[in-house]
Amino acid sequence: MWDNAPLLRSIANALFGLSLVLVLYGAVRYVLQLPVFPLRAVELTAAPQRVSTELLAKVVREKVSGNFFTVDLEQTRQAFEQLPWVRKVSVRRKFPWSLEVDVEEQVVLARWNEAELVNTHGEVFAGKVEQVLPAFTGQPDTSQQVTQMYGELSAALQPIRQQIVQISLSPRFAWQVKLDSGLVLELGREEMQARMARFVTVYPYSLAAMARRARRVDLRYRGGFAAYLPGGEV
Image 1 (tube, rainbow, N blue to C red):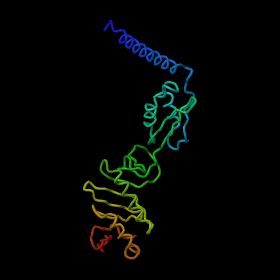
Image 2 (image 1 turned 45 degrees about the horizontal axis):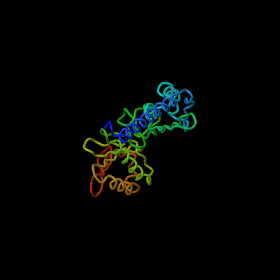
Image 3 (image 1 turned 120 degrees about the vertical axis):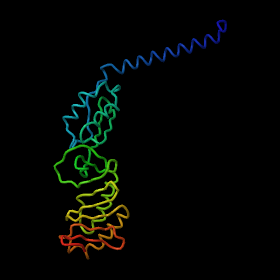
């Protein structure tokens, strides 16, 4: 090998090229970390409605480190997403010297099992609100299912101008709905939409007059329903 001049030249050239690449890499890394590329601003794309600006500023002070080129965007995104009322965050570099932060806040839809909240995507999150909200009840990991059913049944009730104030999914996967009139509807485990449609159809003719007195309507019958009044069953 040592008397093979072409091979030795090839090895030498390869080593020289590798050394040059390493030197250039080190030089670029050094230059990018110089204080001449500082982050001068962190900009929000929109003013937050529920997320505290003080907490956002605290994340910037304590979690955002490095300069324009070396700041860890993923770590920064995760830090912002730990804040209350934050659902999702995107972070990107904005030339010349700032970060642009887009914060998607939670949009609350209902209370979940009395202790938490659920957003319009059916995701459960922690938070406190003073406003009156529908009450969702269900087993763990069923919040999206309950949210979807709430939307479908709410749409079905629009013709009779009734609103759902409580929807429950039992451990046996049976549905129950309470309306703003106080009426409780038993929908069972199957054909919930069809049963609700039947209720909406007969309500103006059979139930509207007794709605103020009826406490519960069982829609699980194939050919009709049973309305439970304080004095008995109809």
